[in-house]
Image 1 (tube, rainbow, N blue to C red):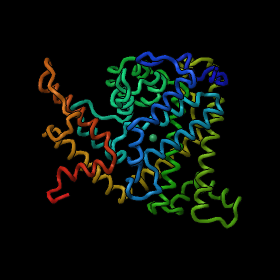
Image 2: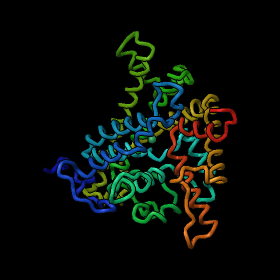
Image 3: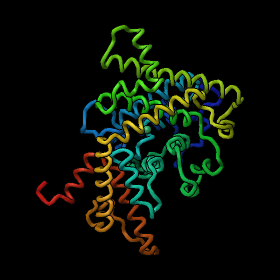
Image 4: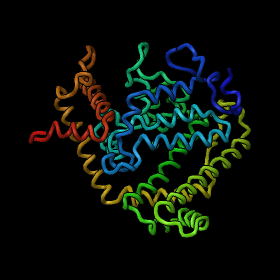
Length: 385
Ligand code: MG
């Protein structure tokens, strides 16, 4: 059965894929990208996303987004756009669900802190870490480490990467050095991520009381859609008004992305994935939508991500991550045995320290928010815990 017969010629397909690192017999009941998605959904790192911060720490409230619900929202948005453009829904779904697997506890605060700690050992990049999770760190299969995903899924997960790292990655890093594009599905997952977080951060920001509707009304994009919602439902207020506004904003962004991308794909004349790779970015917002989205992003940075109450969490997160890193580096014997690295013959102390640092970084990056806090308490609290 040809599951991919309905796709556009420029969509990624299992049959034209660059394949898996370790050859496996094809599935008879699923496409290779469905299989990737299924492997992701069943892996441990995916389950841990439930307890990792997006903006608000998990225990601050039961209704805020977590990395898990964020990833599901990204997948929803990406799939609905993919279907409109004739792109491979299975692939965008796999990329979307996996894109944040490498995130540290405590959102960007945790990531920045770990990057500083890892500075002399190659740094910490969450996209690269997501790839590390699916390529190496998950240990579930008899024949290989990692999930052995398809090239296009891995490529989509590695959204950004420094040139130095790209050079070490071989095949998968090549496009950053050659300045080529990934598949349209990867380009799409990236922008679906942006649509999801801009909108759900507004929603969570209002729910938490850190943002007010009055503040948001200074942003024309929000105000316009709120007026539309009120015209459709006179007298509407409270959470319903917010929801009707946010869903209109998401819809406007999606429609704009579909229309603009369809036109760019048409104008470029691309007919194959190989032509997509050498064309410029084809999945894009219109100019005017891009500037509206930019204003929204700036607003969120200033008023939500740098809100003093969020700063308090950020500061605490930085301390937890940094102190954990240093104590494990000073006393590796405190690490669970699987994260203690044996000194291999033929490598010197400096090289061994770098290997140990990467292992500590893997351990910390894999922690959920509450696990990190508990681990910090276990190691630093003097009183009984
Ligand atoms: Mg994301």
